[in-house]
Image 1 (cartoon, helix red, strand yellow):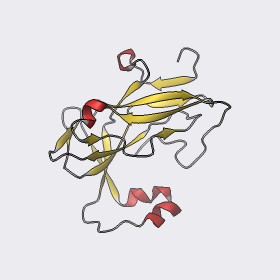
Image 2 (cartoon, rainbow, N blue to C red):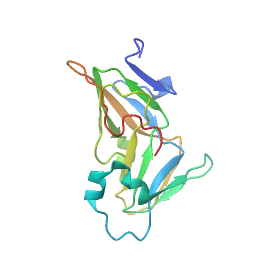
Image 3 (cartoon, helix red, strand yellow):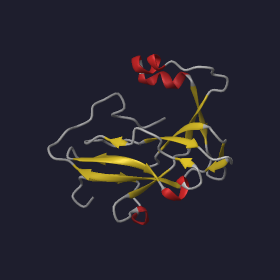
Image 4 (tube, rainbow, N blue to C red):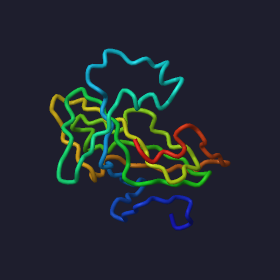
Length: 165
């Protein structure tokens, strides 16, 4: 961070741990539209933004919460925007304190490509417990672990400039 190889905005020193940085849940989530009986993976394979047609954006005001039902999957995102040098990669992981409650904060696709530029990261949030869980914006819900790469690369895929859900 001192050299500028990693930038987190906003940055909070209290979120920094020995080998990771805690990331907060943004004030919006994406919820799957009720009544869908099937989703075709081929639609997503052809158009990564097809997800927008089968989900809706739900705000989580600071003084409120979203009640995540048992067995429900929603998409969340980091409050922080992340920038990493071309020789830095990372992984986004759920925090163990929430995993022990049955909350899977980052189910899959945890790899963060080297060379990210000012992007928010998406969470796949799943409730594996038998109880409903209150999701609140601003909670440090996940952590990013950084890894130095040999050589350099810059991600230029479909989500390279992601800033909203």
